[in-house]
Length: 93
Image 1 (cartoon, rainbow, N blue to C red):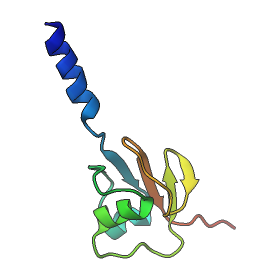
Image 2 (cartoon, rainbow, N blue to C red):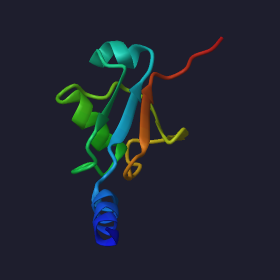
Image 3 (tube, rainbow, N blue to C red):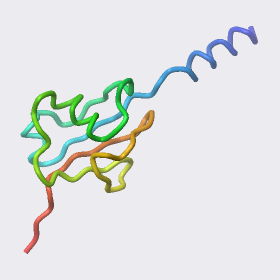
Image 4 (cartoon, rainbow, N blue to C red):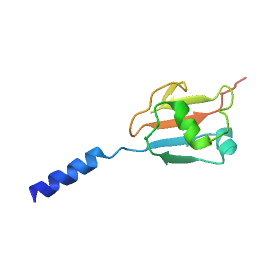
């Protein structure tokens, strides 16, 4: 029984966690998507995440990005289980 449990642990440990993606405000409308999860394979940066969810649609100018609730840019690295968010620039008056 111990070998079986060890094998199960090893199997779970080797699985990659998907990247959770959230879109806010006009980003939701632009891609017609609220949130999704994508496999981490072939994903290295925030820009790769955008390409995976948007296909040929370009990222709108001045799009804000966050990884795990921290503002970043599209060159930021992504790891297993990260949460990536895209939202439009905030304006105020």
